Amino acid sequence: MSEICWLSAVELIDAYKKKKFSPVEVVQSQLERIARINPKLNAFVTLVADLALIAARESAKRYQDGVPGALDGVPVAIKDNTFTKGIRTTDGSKLYEDFVPDEDAVLVSRLKDAGAIILGKTNLPEFGLVGITDNVLFGKTLNPWNLSRTSGGSSGGSAAAVAAGLCPIAQGNDGGGSIRIPSSFCGIFGLKPTYGRVPYYPHIPGWETINHEGPITRTVEDAALMLDVMAGPSIYDQNSLPEYPGKFREDMKGNIRGMRIAYSSDLGAGLPVDREVLEMTMKAAFSFREMGCHVDEIKPGWISMEGAFLTTVLSETYTALFSQMEKYKSVAYPPYLPFMDFAGTFTNRDLIQVQFDRQKLTCQAAEVFEKYDLLLTPTTAVTAFEAGPLGPAKINGHEGSPSNWVSFTFTFNFLGQPAASIPCGFNSEGLPVGLQIVGRRFDEALVLRAAAAYEKAHPWAHKKPEL
Image (cartoon, rainbow, N blue to C red):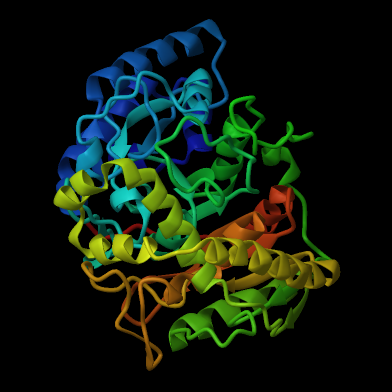
């Protein structure tokens, strides 16, 4: 039964319909694997085994009655900053150690309505602030490919769980790369949809202007299926987009011949990148020529958004915590304390400058996407580094920092464009490398189609970490 834990959502649904096994058997297998593997990884921080088995029996009944939902019987993990009715939701912080929401986030409600079975909540850094997963409450989440390395973040628990076969699909959110970074580090697929495609309500305050909700999966088709369920407008989220006119799972199909693709190794901004990451992502990008695409390398010279990113994230977090700042400082994840002091120095001028920079970036990106259908980059500047630090000490000889290694990801949070990370191989240490695929706003289907074409040519889902 261990192989059940490595089936995709699409494969599970097909097996249920053919009566090969039941959702109860699958949930039991997943819970058994979590019991064996999770102590090594620390991906799940709250399990709801009894609720999952009840939901599995209800799912089995729907299959018997011939009325299953779109994700019926598929186990899913939910990130621990996403509201789940009756299930503890801590945001990785001592401030919310005992917080139990009395309602579901819109996306959780939609997953439940589609028959997905929640196994539990996954780890994240406190408030999702950094690109690793560690906090005072639960500690570090480790990388399935190397247990001395970080899983990335902030959706590090979700990505580690999917990569380790603890669940086929998981939910994550992405305010600066938090879906794509851990997906890259853990060798799986992660999609940040267009800003507003999936409602962000209700939520613990923070990340108001750049957060995106999305899927983390082992296959591209599973992500499309998951997005079909979660996407759609909500009157409670003023930024939510109108209904998508098609189905992502259908619109992702088809060849990509004739597609115009740009590859940039540094966005023309001189971003430092590890040598192996650079070599492997460039090779992967130019392999699209073999699929009939036109591929150019470009150096667009975009404005750096590192300062704008720090200003946005820290000011929103500082404001959210302001009324309880003294209490927070007594229980905070220690590396964050200098961030809070720094955030208190921002001025109105700093905040408005972010908007000016954002508009300039929008115009610069428009010039690229007028000519090209997609832009490819490294997902991150490095592979998974030692668990503990907030960032790598060095990047190809340059000084690292908590933010400069994720410049490829947070840039597209400001633009709001759909962006995915796909696995494109392993470096000399056996660590996964991710290639980022970015599309025009509202065009997740094209990103998914390109990712699926690469997945078909260079499959990755069969590769499993030795745990």
